[in-house]
Amino acid sequence: MLRSDTDVVDFAKNFEYTPVSIESFFDKEKIENDIALQNTGITVLTPYQEQLADELRKALQENAPERLEILDDRLSDLKELATAIAHFPSLLQRTNMSNSVRTPEALVESIISYQEDGDTLLHMPSKAILGKGFLVTKIHTFYSMSRLAKNYTSMDDAAVKRYSDETVSMMFTLMAEDVYLNLMKDKTLSMELRRQLANSLIILWEHRSDQNISDIAPVLQSVWSARRTLAPAFGTMMGTSELLLVSIQMDAQWAQFIKQRLGDNEVSQAMEEFLFGLSYEQIQRLRAILKEQGVKAIGRDEVAAYLGERVKTDVSLDYRDFYLLYTVRRDNARARQRLHLPGPTKTLEDFFIRFVLEKNLEKQLNDQAAKV
Image (cartoon, rainbow, N blue to C red):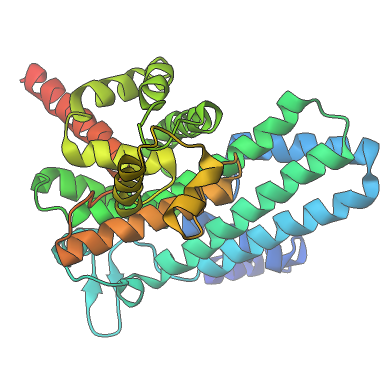
């Protein structure tokens, strides 16, 4: 067996051949890039996303060939970004750092034990930060693809919707990082579940994809859509029951979550924030104002006038609106936790994802016990 470049040269000399480098047959830069993409662990495009890209490329070739270059440039940018990230050490392997050795196990324990408040940006691995930028770029890329599909091809509405759905799915993956970090600071969770969360977070950092969230995202998206169409009446909470009745039929896990957790005061408060697009504090003030004035219910467009401040109670299916309102609820919850204020200290997404992961862990433990 030829085990090195020296072996190849010696073999060639013995048989009077002139050794030729493989680089003369292939593009050296392409080889290096392909190797880098394999090493980084980041999924540039999943098989399904590859399929979407290919279908859009064919549709543009037929309907708007001048737009094809735009698509190819964006996808090329994604690959180049992933290649750059590939130069940073894997989070799933033992790595020699400048003055220490990092192992996945040590990283898990470090994430769990870190309980400080504030932005953890400078405490995160470089690959985690860079990967987040990659995911945002990928989200914007698929949003652009949905616009290209809608405006420059003859695809029907159902086909175009697949691109926007994929964009929303990736938005939930972006959100998952915050949820995992929030839950790992919760000491009421078992250490086993917190370690599982830390492992999920590291895998998310490494690959920028997450199976847990891939399964959960369609449920949350459906609840968001139900919230948009029902337009509940403010003040009386009329409409909440309607939302629950509609959404409870969408997914067995969501129905189970509603039945088992909505009786918890914090979960109920988080549901109200999600449903009305208002903070816990704004909801309490609005209720007091309406009660004082003897008003039973008002519409969405009247909320700002009653509160005397600008509030974003309108809803849309835009993934950016969903993420924006999520981050407001997330930041408010963190502030209440830190300042020991009344109201929910977690978002509805936190509570639901925790519920799903606890049920999954419970099933794993039961399956293991059954095998013994």
